[in-house]
Amino acid sequence: MRFSCVPLVQFSLAGFAAANFFHRNLAYHSPFATHPQLAHDTAKINENGIQRRQDIDSAAFRDGHYTTFYGGDFSNTPFIWGGGVNFTHAVASGDPFDTSVLLWTRAVPLSSSSGALPNVDVPVCVAYQVGTNPDLTGRIISYGERFTSYDVDWTVKVEATGLKGGYKILLSSRMVQSTLRAHNTTADIFIHLGDYIYESLGNGAHIGRQTLGRELATIKDYRQRLNQYRTDQSLVYAHMHAPWITVWDDHEVSDNPWKAGTADSNDTAVGCAFSASGACFTDRKLAAVRAYHEWMPIRQVDPQDKLRIWRNFQIGKLLDLTMLDTRQYDRDITDMYYNTEYVNTIAAFANRSLMGAAQEKWFFDTVSESKNRGAVWRVVGQQIVFTQLNELGAFDLDAWDGYRANRKRVLDHISQNRISNTVILSGDSHANWVSDLAYPNDTTTYDPISGKGAIGVEFAGTAVTSGSSFGSGITPTAANVISNQLIDLNPDLQWSEGSYRGFFTLSIDPNHLNATYYGMNNITFANLDGFATAQFVVKAGQNKLSRPVAGGSVLAGVLQAQVNVNSTDDNH
Image 1 (cartoon, helix red, strand yellow):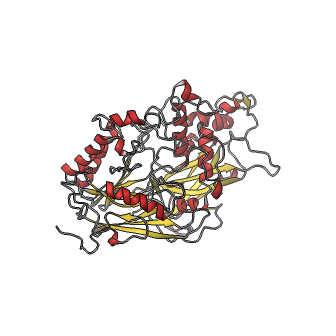
Image 2: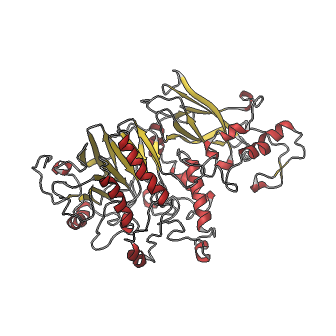
């Protein structure tokens, strides 16, 4: 696939409605496509920015659409940018279906040779082509043109259609001169479970990751932070070489959110003054959501439901990948540090919801339909640790432990409807956890040694570079002391590791699901010095981790009881 800039001399507006070329850029659609105040009116953008200049005498034209320049005289403004364009962040893809995929780029007008900035009201036209091979010498299967403008931070999102299952997605653009050497792991799809950015200034300066700006509150703030993160070379490489399927966690907006606020912002007078911007929670959240949809290759699921990103991907009969939103959508009040004791008193209330009633019903219907259609695996991507974790006498009330009845409803639905081969993926915690899914601490029906009584598996991963929840910079030896204590307290927990930063991969076929965890030896600079810390197998139909867990041996962390090493994968 290639994006390119179309100069004015190669592009004619005659014979079509130019508004379509704004409208067909999906960045203008999401996430507020039908909201009367927050939507982008592409017809109005076209009227003010292009056709009125094309069709009428513009000598006295004053543009009222571009609020930053309200009342400005644009009589000499060209109707389309004819200068150079910088594809500032290469290209990306996401949300693949069997016959289509979303493509993304960003096309920013270049300054003139004198250094003067271009008029930001001028739209840029971008052309794209999708071919059967990376250099586009084969058959072209999808192509088109789209407009972008500063209204959507110069981003472009299109849906490439006409694809066939099995195409490997390799992206290129004219601004890309070289790529990093091949990494030691490959993937057909990247799944990101949230915290793609952090809203705070962070503490990454000591490893060369000083963030720009301030704590995020306005659309400018969120755009700037996404812009900065997306300049990371390894992230560019990953986005170019495989489609991403993402959900947000909390920090894409702010720490520990619920449906009416976050840990440091709400719509009270105090909350509105949390930063120099004076932004209230509602404005802050809408700004964050808009910027996320501009910068991420993610589909707009439902234009009537602007906060909905929960969605499902059917990958043949092999699996359903179901992505949930357990953070931003319709979550009841969470632990915001000052109210921990209160949330602890209501954590088990039956009416507490982590997902909201609409999402919860959709989730149950989706996994049931997955079983009914004959899919082998059900992989659920969501943000926070699902399994109960007694953390030395305390529980993370911002995870599923703060919404225990909601968790029980999920376990009940899976168990009572005999929905087999369910694997939950979790992020957020900055540590590695692998568990059999079972009713918490119910060792009368679940045997942690054999796995009998389990109804699924959870794989939870750590952060790429952010510090461990066991303690930032904690050594493997010190982390294992804590892991040993956690293993003793939590019979469902089969592996705990809290020192190494990294990621994990899944390899899935009709008979096995394999999870391999990777740890990086050094995160102070970009490098490939990592190793496989542990490997786990789930056999289709067994609904538990195969025994001996991780083959009885790991290179980091602690296995449950460190026993049963010599047993075979049981049939008992």
